[in-house]
Length: 352
Image (cartoon, rainbow, N blue to C red; front, side):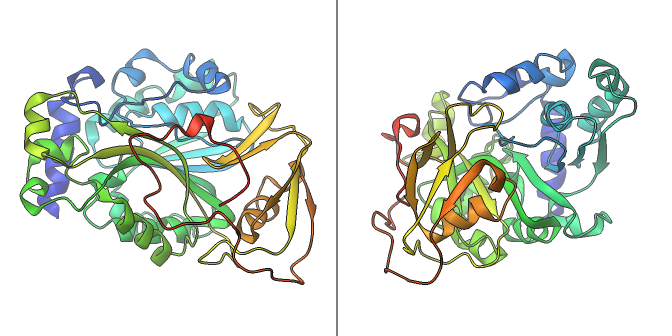
């Protein structure tokens, strides 16, 4: 494990100088960010942006005043975006194990404090390993949101990362992160390929193993927010990975009591009232829960809890009780949650 960590530090600290040095598009954000994140990103220093290596959008809606932890914060790009979005009343902690990346992140703390018009910094960077979060003296149940951008695949003990994250979240908090997943388990030979590991491919989890790990860590009902196939676009690398298909997926995992392993029907419904920044006309909980403002929509018990027992409660009206169970919520299935032909932007509805 130490060897893997050292090689990752070397790859991201010495081998890569900027995002253009990556050999594939696995660690590249595929979709454009929403307007409020674009505005915040425009205020982030150019050097911080140049050393960004991510595969998705990792800052959820409605984070004003929250306390956020970024796992594998790198040059600090997502931390500084979050710093702007949480405001002066919020706080952001970034954790990374690569000195060169931390040097860049720390270099611009005062710059962004002044840029955002804050009286004092609301962001801190810690040197640490994502597989040893319990050694950083971070208080349990102290973060509202944990984010991570294309980093967990670089960990050798991914279950440990998820368990530590669960322990650090407040009840009702969530882990919202993007990473690389595969349609099958990665052969050991490819896992030993230093470049492919650094490119976020060899460490990718088979999607079904990820779901198992998440549930074992306490995140009972993982929800995919967005997924896109990774095309790699490097002939040599494509030949080495063969038929394995890779996907960039954003997941949200809630720390909630009472979530069930399946989506159950209690005859409940919700209606989005509006008010969440960036969601003026509709709110998307995940890639198959689209809530137009003012429309009453039936939901399973788990979705009800994800809205009623979290920071989103004030923005919804809730209907129904837990008195009667009507069986499984129709529309649930156990198939692969993403595929090359999916288009999450055009999927809407209330079924799980």
